[in-house]
Amino acid sequence: MKKYVVLVVVALFSIGLTCLPTRANAEEAPDYKKLYSQGIEEGIINSETTLFEDWQRENEEEFYPNYKEAIATEDGLPEEFNNYGTWLKVNNYGVPPEGDLGDWQDVTPGLRATWGGFTVKAGDIFMTNNTDSIGIVGHVAIANSDNYILDMPGEKWNPQNNNNRQLTVASWLNTYKRSGKWVKVYRMNNQTIAKQVAKYADRNYFSTTGSAVKNIKIPYKITADLFSKTPSYCSKLVYQAYYYGSGSLPVLIKTYGIVTPYNIIGYFHLNYRPLLMKTF
Image (cartoon, rainbow, N blue to C red; front, side, top):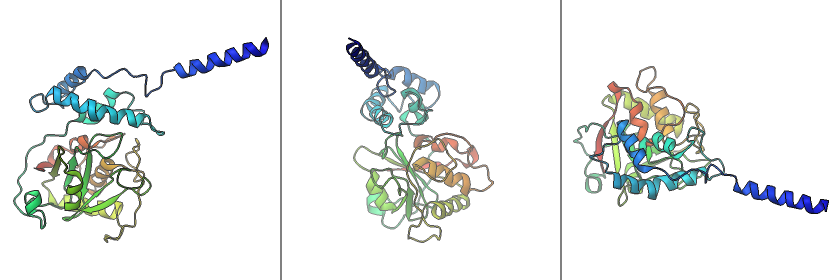
């Protein structure tokens, strides 16, 4: 009789454990209308350029599945992403910064026919909605010279423990400018600072000697530690490049926690804020 009672108790306890809600399955379905209105009130979403139906479809097909996959991983997401609404807000509601349009005239060799003759300059920030990794929306990179792009592409492209890479501009664009996806390029007016930042990025996140041979290996992981160089992720690398590479100049607003691709331009002080130069 005692053995039977024990077995019943164990069985009931096991059933109770399986019924306990987890972070991944306890959350109710997002209220997209409420989140959309919240984004408008905060000045992030422009209802004229981002229609609700299109925005909701992106959430349902891309953003929310990304979030669910991320919280189901072994490491999960940092605590500041405690629900989908918070996660979406940190990701700028899935909307890229609009920005003012700058001028461009020159031509980068090899880009005239395929990419419309745009000249890439060291320090340019490349942003795309072609998301590489789970846990964040979009992807961002920095031109560490006039001819190369430096980024942290996530495990889809590179090993987690050695994720930083350098690609030619044409190769990077060919990777991310796919059907239905865009690439935006932002540029700081002060090219002296931009080149200084690009050099810092190259020597601290790719090669200490500035050569084409990589001798720095950075593991990929999204953490709330914004000022450690390793591990890192795409927008953290770009933020650090401008934060450290600009020296004592007040280029970036100092923040803490996680920076995301669509938020990166908003961390620049107004006098240094990069302009939108080109959309591919």
